[in-house]
Image (cartoon, rainbow, N blue to C red; front, side, top):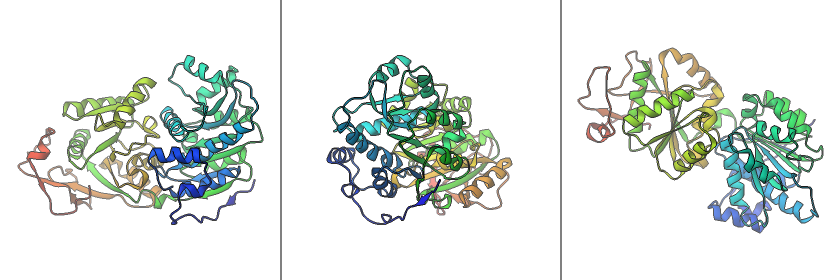
Length: 439
C-alpha cells in the first residue's frame, strides 16, 4: 500500500462551494443550511473525494469534516442513481460508520439537510438503543445513505436484513475513537461483507498507531490530508486549569464558573454515569438550568435532551465522554472538565465541544493536587502548558507554585471551607478584579 501525500493548494485562499465541483441541488442545500464559505478541510477533501479515490484525513473536531465527506457522498449518490436501473431491496449505496448513536444521528440530519433537494433520497440510521422494528422497515428498501454504529449493523448483517455487496462508498468517521472503543474487529468483519471495488474514506483526529494498521487492511493507495497536529489544535479556545482541595471545593469552583454571565451554554464532563447524575442533582439544587446525558439513558431520552440543548431550553449539559462524542452545538461557550479524562487524547475531544467552526471558546479543567501527573500527561500530549490560575476567595489551601488570579474578587466571602452558593451571588457580591480575566 502506498500513501500519496496531497499538495494543499486551498489553505488560506477564499474559495466558494461553487468552485468545488458540487451540483446545484447540493449547493442549494448548503445555502439553506446557512454556510457560505467552505472550511479548509472541505476545500482540500471534497475535490479528491469526487475523483473516487481512497482518502484518509486527519482534522480536528469542529473543522467541518462531516460536510467534507457527506457533500461529495451525496453527489456520488446522485450520479449512481442516474445509471441505476434497479438494485435489490435491502441494499446500501453509501455506508458511514461512526462510534456513537449521537454522532450517527447528527450525520444523518446533516445529510438530510444538504440533500433536501435530491429527489427520492433515502437516508437511514442503524444504531443501538432504538427499536428494531423501525430499522427493519427502513432496511426493507434500498438505502442511499446508511449511517450506523458497528455493533447494531453487524446484528442486521448476520440476520441477513441488509446487504452490503452494493456499497459504492464506505466512510469511517472518527476512526481513532472507534478503535479506542474496541471496534477494530467489528470494522474488519463489516469490511469482509463489502465489495472489494469501492471507495473508502477515513476521517480521524490522528493518523498513527492502530489507525495506520487499520488503513493497511481496508484502503488501497489512499491519498492523505493532514491539516493539523496536536499543537495547532484549538488555538481559538482559552484553556485554564484550576486546582481544588477536594470534591466539595471542585463543586464550589464549578458553581462560581457557571454563574458568570459570560457562560452562554456549557458542557460539564464527568468520568462516570453515576457522577453525571449526582452532579446534575447538585447543580439543580443550586438553581441552575441543567440536564444530564449518559449511556444509561435510552435513545429517546438522549435525543430529547440534545434537542432541548440545541433549542437553548437549558444552559448546562453534564455528560460522560462517549455520550457527548459528536455533539455539535454552536451555543456551547464553555467546556468544563469536572473529572479528568481517562485518556489524554479525550481532553482534545472534550474541549472541542466549544469553539466550534472557528468561534472562540473557553475550556476549564478542575483537578486535585494529587492529579498533577495526569495534567502533565495531557500537557505533553497537546504540546502546551495549560495556564494554572486562581479565583480570589476560592483559593486552594495548597497553592500551586504558579497561578494567576482571575475572574472576580468576591467581597465579604466567608473564610470557612463550608461555602454555599446561590445563582444570585454573582450579581450581588462580585467585583471585577483588575488582573488577568482569562475567562
